[in-house]
Image 1 (cartoon, rainbow, N blue to C red):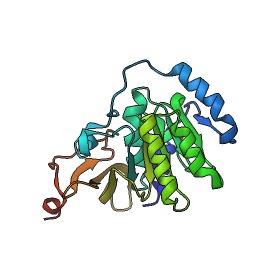
Image 2: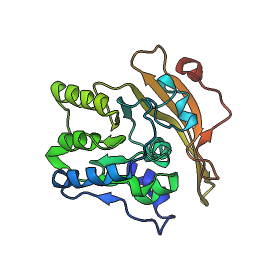
Image 3: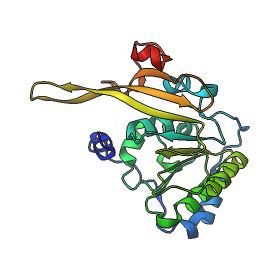
Image 4: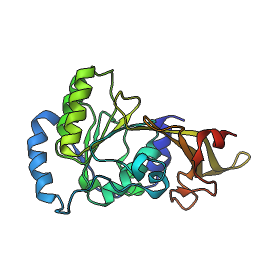
Length: 244
């Protein structure tokens, strides 16, 4: 199911939310945004792990999203927003680069704080420069590369992430990824024989770590009928056991 359908399921229901910051001229406005963020940043001591939804954290190497690391994420709006919700609710600024169809209403419903969300919908050929600049001032950066980046550019961005302690979520493959998160066996609930409405989604999330052995997978409600993301009754297990 496409990103547009995935997001649209949630956008039409939720209104009266404030708009996130949208940068139409991102290069010129980065410095102003940097000053604003610094004035609002919490003074809590830094940590190497970002807050992560517990249903996903136990699948990830180290027990959560690592600061200074990059992750590849399948292009699922619900999975992305679930990953953003916990760090955003804890006060982390999040930036979305090159994803013009990102739905702020749906993001707000998932728990993303729109006051700490910045959108750069159309970075054009400067997507990598903008991604690196946003990583200088925000804790989590989402980007969707329109083309393959050079090895040297990827290495420079990785060094900047480590230096700044920012976490990069790449929609699609990425050369230096800590882990890849993907969805499979997705099933919607609520549609009957020509009647009803989509009420819940159940899917298997699989995390493949570059240095680990077998991938780990778990069955999640994304979300359930009460619009809560949670584990289903199935246990976390290696992928081969899940398939068997």
